[in-house]
Length: 91
Image 1 (cartoon, rainbow, N blue to C red):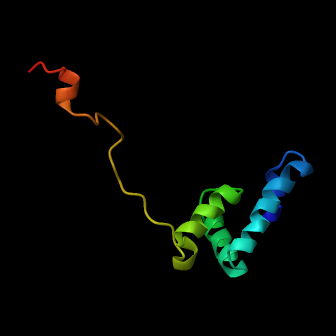
Image 2: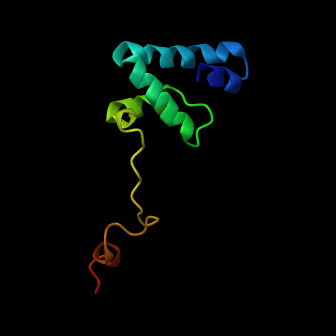
């Protein structure tokens, strides 16, 4: 994963901080959990997972289950306040 971070960086120095942030995760979480989160993140569509991708996986325990929770299928937005709000009291 560290290699992928440096591959994505335009210059080598730009990869130092993201790489160190990922390595610092092993201070709070066990190395086995960090490795499991890394594998889970690399299976997804993200080409270069970073701290911001790994931390939520570790915080929610997805690394223990081995899969990310499925996102609920919802509508594409729409009106959330109801017709009475948009009618401004006119019926």
